[in-house]
View 1: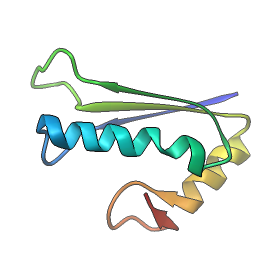
View 2: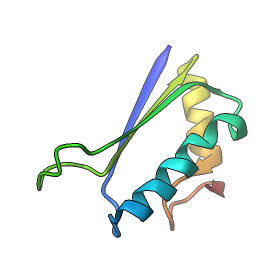
View 3: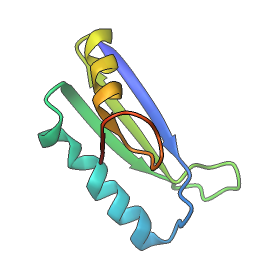
View 4: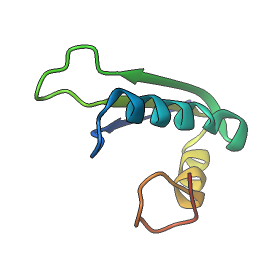
Length: 84
């Protein structure tokens, strides 16, 4: 089992922007067949060092993680396939 962790600092970190992003990330479960588990968390400390959102995704293998990273892109302007 491979665990992939991503931390996000949003350009717009309003409560509405955070809620929209959380909803989009949770929607990956039905769209990406390689995902075996997914958790999304939001900042509760609100400190300068805090990130707005955390994403933890579990995959069966390193090959599955690599295929996911090649096929899907969450960042605008990054190379690769679909922008989710």
